[in-house]
Length: 474
Image 1 (cartoon, rainbow, N blue to C red):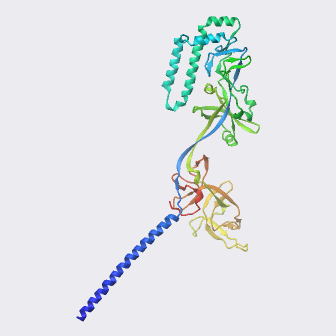
Image 2 (cartoon, rainbow, N blue to C red; image 1 turned 180 degrees about the vertical axis):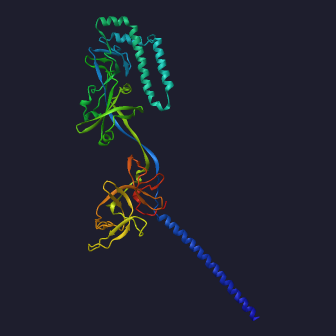
Image 3 (cartoon, rainbow, N blue to C red; image 1 turned 30 degrees about the vertical axis):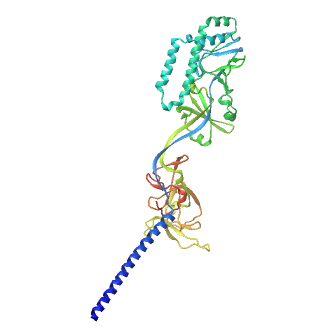
């Protein structure tokens, strides 16, 4: 009996021990998992994460906006008599030699009869109506949502065409009265003295030429434009219209040194008129007056489109620049030590990487025995024969030794390179870039450079937050 009680007691002890052991294992596992989760959360919230950008092939269109001054050959026609003024040609219309433009009625009788005749439909002939219908049909056929901005121009042109047709019809309808008034020299017709484009405004700049251009002419705050149709009456000597007599015209643009250098070797450039988004090729030359460079753009057609303007907004469209496209935020600068390229030597069993034999400068000014230090070259200046290096074990004041020679070079010069940090391998490596062109957001850099980046490389999106060899958590 005693033996049985002893065995039962042992079994109970074993059960208790196992229970305690199972409890301890569960607790340990729980603590391990809890510690891992806590460590992971701490690492997640305290680790600086670097956003990356995948390098892609891209294009930036180089264009620059300017406001230019329009110059052209213009003749201002003045009234020889005072009286009521009537027009027979719509604004911005081509006129041949002898085309009737306007008339001046000294006593106003003919003008009154013209108004009475114009109030009747009889003054519009079938030819007039046919021309107006064709004008409307052409506009409707060519209309698109993209050209909606031209609707107001169409309205103005249609009103002008109606006015022209009605006034000419009215003038013909009262021919007997006009003949009598002309014989009595109280009614005067003004006809175009030569072919050109008729415009009903003046601004005092009609006589400006390339030789008389000054900086003040580009101050639009003092510009004044006067319509010759503002009133129905005119006094002797006042302008009644002007005639633009040449299809060749110029746009003068003040430019900076950068644009001057860009256009230095060319003769023709493509431009875009921002008013109607049309593009054209222009011949160009450059001049300098009062320390200001001017671009003179010369065109040989389409002047009628902008006959109502003296100042015009344009974009100079240069060639598209293509290469590797990177965000400007990725670009940073780094300082490097400069050493002669000829001092580099293979590791020769010491290292698989090329490097330099370095004599480190001691605190007392002496130099330690030369040791081999592997060194990465970030850029080689072929013209100066200098290599750009960055190494913790090579500092300014150290000397490098040329293999097989007694020549020494003291590391003292530094220079900066612009570049980005490549993070393909999980840590940051500086890569020099060769910039072609940039705008406010992106830069185009050359591809295939020895120390640069390649298509599809991953680079740090913000280069200012990264240091060399920094481990990257994406």
